Image (tube, rainbow, N blue to C red; front, side, top):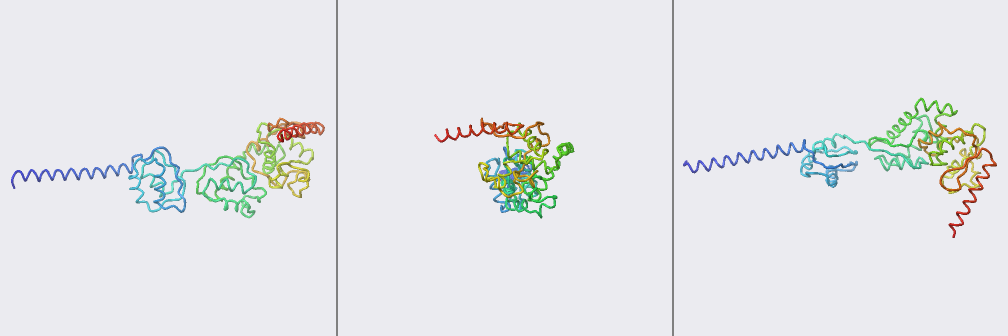
Length: 346
């Protein structure tokens, strides 16, 4: 073999060696990148539904537009045969391999379940939960309306809203209806501290009765500064043996359909009709917010027995200790209402 041939063969050997090194280096880099490097930018909130296949999950992640190397993600996810249903948060600290493990092992990120606004029926509560969680509203409603299902908490469906305190709670998106309710009951029990239980005792009320009265207060006003005063009015009525005569309980009897409570509505035959029956109704007429619960536990002390809407229509009320005062306040409001309606007609 001549010198020239040897040089050519040596060159080819070196080139082949370099190619092998480059290929090995490329594989090593890919392996490192897949396992260690951040492959995402920003935050992606990923929801994996029961019907989704791995390819659909991958497409959903890629559709976010926040994947730096789609090839890296595709390489790694190609090895994942099953992915756990759940909610996952992918951020800039995640590598492709971490996301693959997260999905295959079900390392879920909690979601916020927010209960707020008017919650007047179990169906409304079920819809609010169903809109935010994987558990559907139908299964949730079935649980909330079932006396047998609620018996484990020592209540029936009339007392449902004594178990629920509107707030924002972190839980797994995949939690079942029962797990969600268990968590809400656990949080409610934690809210009832020894200090709050003592405050209820001082008002002569049980925890359930506090919730019931608080639901009536919430039906009267959303103006938080006035809630302790209204709570005090109703407590004064209870203590003097007067009927509560609370319009929100009448609205409850008619599933909140009447825009105004008229005399004919007061004749409804229902244990929730506080114009006919003394004391509190059988249970809450809505899910009372914390502010109303606190208002009942810490009412404003006064000799007020009556109240009516303020004629300024600003959402506040005028309070009175005598019926004569109350009639004057009521006439002022009715006059302002008539004038307002007359102006609107023109």
